Length: 574
Ligand SMILES: [Zn+2]
Image (cartoon, rainbow, N blue to C red; front, side):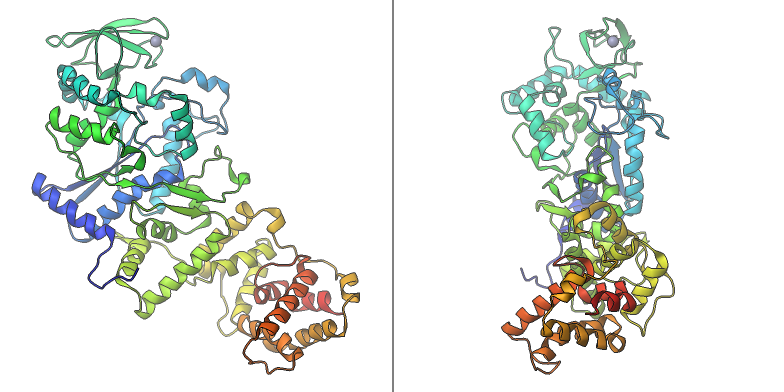
């Protein structure tokens, strides 16, 4: 647990390794790290680790003054495999496009984007901008259709027997799906179906022999094609389409409408781009995984070297509300950025080694997480922070390009959430309450607490279930008030008498804890005893019931400030 001052964080250790490896393999050239994303639907928040892991390493390398390229390969020339559930603006007719490249599938109705891939890429692109991730995006559609990989394709076709032999060593073993990290349930579903990706990925089968290249049909644009012959000398390739029956003979030396199968495509690009670092999900640690097979193919077929490729653990999501599932029920990075600031989200990735799994909280846990984050910031401020924690913090709040926007007055997230819960986002009321928190230091404008305030408001309105929201009573609970004994009445009177002189967060904290002490005949600053704690708990429960008709709620001092002195008097006057 304790970290010595000489120990560096995981990002620094990878940066050391990657710089050394890059200098060995490609002296004087920019360091190349890579990520791959498939815009086959909403890009899952879990997939962000595919980007954040190389991003953090690249950023550290950049901070040390080296030139770095972080490639994000958009696998938008992949086949459209299935119609995702719950995406707005599509219907069953989208199933007609299965088998086409993702860039040839129409975008959901109402989209501002030209096709399916661009539509889902756009949301990820803006999230990455907000997160401060600098990268070179590479569209595989553009690369393939421009003939960028022509030599590599011809080379792979020439060496198809070698590739087939390598793949054959792994075919008997369990073959997992392609690289992209998927939510566990979807991955399990696919495994259960025994379908798709694994079988189609290596180009196996076909009576005409093995071909690592698959054309998209010249008539229906689907990849349900079978290569029937290939001539190494003329590069003439014949295929037939099993979907529409179309067939033709093309010259691969000038044909640009097809792609290498995944298990060959990935190592080809390692060699083509000179990738030094590219992590992948834990599902790739198995013997027949794309990463393992790719290592052999890049070495034996393309004469390249496999990147340093740590496996990263899954990132889970806790408590995302069903009501915000407008994008197919899939939590996306944009969803996370609606309820938390970019530095906090960056910190979650920076502080955990890639092989450690963690959860991103959409539930009450986010409040605790923010408390922890604020405590870390305070330790950085006063110099008591441990070195590894300091490193994670600095990677979270900025990049080599500079600091990310932050909230000028970072009031506690849980306080902001409580206040907007009660005010329902009413600005004037919010500014009054937030100013009352610390009357010596009032707020001039809500901009001082933005964007954190907006994130807290989004969290309250989109993630907190209605039965956990705070609804302040309009009228006193006269029945409950009438049932109080003398003790109860006296405690409320003490509280009301103290309101004016204690109207601040600190003051009200002293007051609400102090009333039960006075009732017990103790001094207001007396140390709490077990009996006193019981008395405090029942006093607090009484206040919650009278103010919000529940046994619990936001912290009482915050709640009292938010309700306002006049209304508190109205609701508590026995
Ligand atoms: Zn066809």
